[in-house]
Length: 250
Length: 242
Figure 1 (cartoon, rainbow over the protein chains, first blue to last red):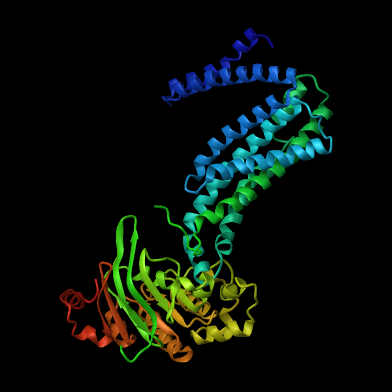
Figure 2: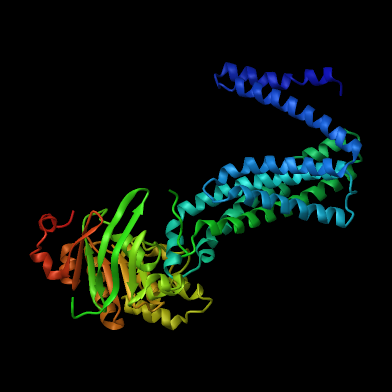
C-alpha cells in the first residue's frame, strides 16, 4: 500500500468528523487527536520493529517487551488505585503471563525464537492481559464495596479473609473471563479476527492463517485465566490487616 | 455491678475514623452471663463498640479484655467464635436456611449435622420445615432468628446483637425479645444488645449502658433509666430515644 492510498483511507476519519459536527457530538477534537496519535505511534513502532527485526538482537527484544509491560501496567493500575501496591501486582502478573506463554511457545518449538514472532505475540498477550486486568480490577473493587456485609458476616463468624472474600473474588474472575470465552464461541461466524484477516490480505494461505489464529486464541484463554486469578490472589490480602479486619478506604 | 465478673472490660478505649472521634475514653464492663443493653441516639458509637468486642475493628488506644484476657492475645478466629455477633442487616448467603446455618462449620472445614441445625432452629422458634427453605423467602423477623441461630452454631460465650429488632413489626419484636431471654437462660451466654427502645432495655435488659456522642454517659442496672442522674440522659429518656 502506498502512502497516497493510505491518505485516501482518511475518508474513514472524515465520516465520523462530519457526523460529530452535524449532530453536535463534540467529538471532533478527540477524533483528530486519536487519528494523529495512531498515525505517529504506529509509524514510529513500524520503524522500530523494522530495526529490531533486522538486528535480531536479544537486548532490543527484551527492551520492546519491557516497554509493553510498563505501558500496560501504568494503564491497568488506574482501575485498582484502592488496592495497596497495585502497580507491582499488575507488573508481576504481566511478567508472569509473558514468561509462561513464551516458555510454552518457544519450549515446544511452536514458533521460532525470532524477534518477529516474540514481539508480535508478546504484544497480543500483554495487551490482552492488560484488558483482563482492567476488567478484573473494575469488577473486584465494586464487588468488595457492594458486598461488605457478606464479608463482615463471614469474618464475624470466624472465617478467614480468604473465605470472606471468596465469592467476590470468584465473581470478578468469572466476569472478567466471560468476554474472552464468549468472543471465542462466535469467532469465524460473527467476526474474523484482525490478525487472521491481516495475514489473508497479505497473501497467506487461509488454512495456515486459521491455524495461527487458533494458536493465538488458545493462548489468550490462558492469558485471561492466569491474569485474573493471579491478580485476584495477589490483591485480596491487601484488603485486610494482620488482625483479619477489612480495611476501610480513608 | 460489683457482684458480677466482667465478660468484657474496656479500659480507656478510643476509636477514630477519618479524623472523627467515634469512641472517647470508654471504660467499663459488660457483666458475665447477663443481658446488657446499649442505648443512646444514633451515632453514639454503639455499633462500633460491638465490632471492637468481636475483633472486626481494633481501638486506636486503650485496652479491651475478654474473659480477663487482653483481646490482642486472642487469635482473631478464636475470638470471633468466642464472641458471636448478629449483624443488624442479618445478611444471608444465597441458598437455603440450612446452608446459612452450616456456614460457621463450613468455615472450619466441618459439617453441621441436620439434626443439630434443626435443634438450633427450634431454639429460635422456627420449625424444622424452614431448614430447606430459601433464605430469600424469609421475613425480616425470620431472617433475624436464622441469623441468631447461625451465630449460636459456634457456641459463643458472649453474644452481641446489633439493633436486631429495629426493622421488625410488633409481634416479631416481641418474639425476638423472648428469644433473647431464652438464649441467655439456656446457654448462659453474656448478651450485649443495642436497642433504641427504652422499654426493651427496662423489660428485657438487666444492665444498661447509655452512650452519647462516643462516650459512656451512665451505666448500671436497667432501672437507672427510671431515674437517671445525668442531665443528658434525663432528656434522652424523656424523649424516649431519639
